[in-house]
Length: 363
Image 1 (cartoon, one colour):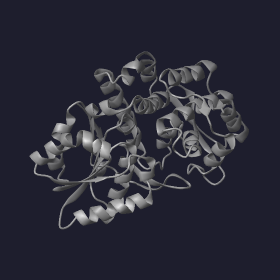
Image 2: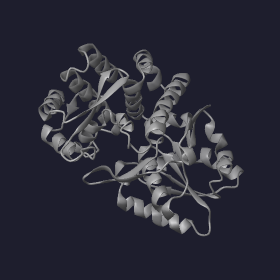
Image 3: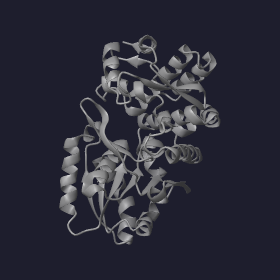
Image 4: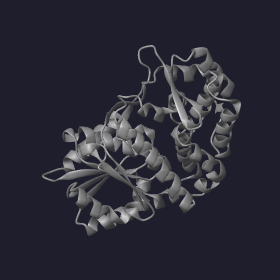
């Protein structure tokens, strides 16, 4: 088991990663004095497959619990779904000391975290991610929120969990596509902050895809270290340091939105966004063709898309303009100067963005 301390003063918490960490869940709840009653938000697939792994340590520690299942889709990240879950939470929370467990992937983590932030002006919650993407990214850092029809995460809050427990044995139920989606975020961390990790991935990406234990523990822990270090320095993006975590996300989110969040999952959107960010960085003279091609080759080798299929340039650009990272009419893109080194560029010429997108369209 690996333990990372994310230090944020009174909001500090531990990230525990490994095989078998879930056995200590009840002990951790008692240690943190979170409460006596767990409101567990999950989906039916995770509940059917892994509820017993969660309930054993809860029962051993005398923790009461109730499950609330939501649909396993981005549609669950809505205000309608949020209010429905809150009604169930309020019904359960009668003279109890309640806390929330987010037991699932990024959608469940974002939704549960947001509910934790707004219910009674804040109740404690634990992140127990069950996807590779959530283990390395969305479960860490306290970004919570739901979507509107105009875009993703437009209603949200910064609200830190009290604990993150990444039980890596849960990942064995993931499809190959879901594993690759998580690998996209791992590649992102390597590109923005760790050239050594990038070289490791070039040689060992098949081990990640095959969920080889030692490789999985190594990359999940390293990504958690990288993100924790960034969050500690800029928890709420006020200093601009946390912005580098958006590498590949601006155009990636636009591609996801243009496909109505059905055509590409989040990891695939980010993969395409990173390919485009590399291409734009090359066009602006920030990186060499060798660096650009290494990024594309790793993404392609990992089985992630490098060309956009079935979407129009017009739809992608429309979604791009709705991105919340616009400040007034100023766009901001996280680009790179080298593998492991980022730069934030404002007002990147639209023709360069359009040309890069057009060159990747495969209608």
